[in-house]
Length: 501
Image 1: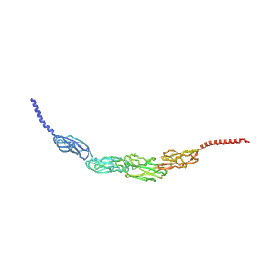
Image 2 (image 1 turned 180 degrees about the vertical axis):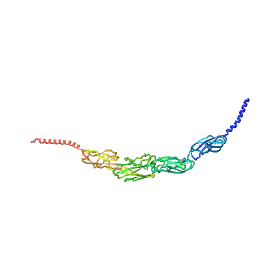
Image 3 (image 1 turned 30 degrees about the horizontal axis):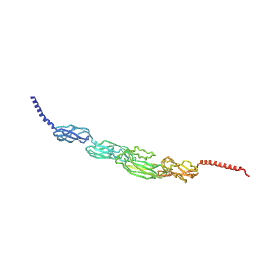
Image 4 (image 1 turned 90 degrees about the vertical axis):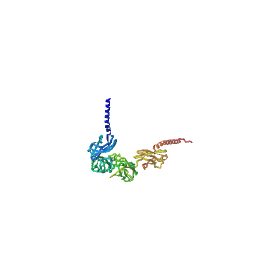
């Protein structure tokens, strides 16, 4: 019993001593931190702002709270009440060029928080100017300026002066002063280039130094490829005295600004003398051309043309222009036309030709198939043939009799004949008009395009069939012989008859 009482007294004593100590522990301030923001890249001379949240999770106020770094910087925050979080920005000034690792933490009179590790890079001030290509045409046409869209940025926390954008020793754009942490979009104008591939090494420069080189490549297409010209339709070949009709398509690239576009005839006799098409401006949505288009000469099926080294993949929209030419000489001859326009500072003027073929005589013929043989007392059928030797289809083909002898039909209508067609024409003449040696004549009429033609008259004579004549004689002669024999026999009998008294 005494032992139990002694144990109870010992426990009571220990409890009395522990309660004040536990209460004191429960009322201690407790700091927790979190870094919410800080720059990963700064430039020598900048301060490194570190934004932190500091929470007092203890039951009593945290007094004399201080932010500290492993590099020795500190900042007084003051007191933080229990269960309160505050935000503060802590500036680091002690660092070295290159990569840095710094630990930050908070402490108060009762507690030190856990450490938070920061990693950031420090570069020289010259590296604070950066240059970036936002947009640039991959190709331009000769005479047009190359205008890339660039972004120049001052990443430093101080303004920089004397900012320039250069390519080699050439200043492309004088930017001037750029405020701290500011980016500007500029469009320099490059007019010194060569046809074909071009390369630029762009740099941004300021009073603090020069940024890294930014390479930029673009292609320059010859100005005479900004417009495509070709023959779309032609009525060649034609006959002498016919009018040649042809259409020329003039198509400006949608990727080029073409001014003062004009097509005019050089050869006399072409009407109209020309067309002024004015300016062709690419749509606003289109930025850069992809490939050049062939404009070295007119594309004509029978003539060789000089081909461009680039594929004509650019989309083009053209104007179809009508021309006609009269009083052309016989044979094949070139009709000269001239295309002219301006692309920027370059004026393009070039001649090309359209070949016109003029035929001397019509190539549709009326042919007598065979000698005209007639039989007496029978109707006569005359057979003729029509041959189209032209390389084109002819229309309204008809054979017309010219003699005063009535025929049926009075006109033999064939209609349309394709090249190399060979078709017959038939006429019937009543037997009472069939006379040996009578002259028959016919002509051929037809149309090519809108022009009408007729051939010289074809003459033929009617010949009686000799076989028919000889056959009639064979029938008549025996009859005549028989009659003569009968008459002779009667005469002989009369002489032999005796006289009566």
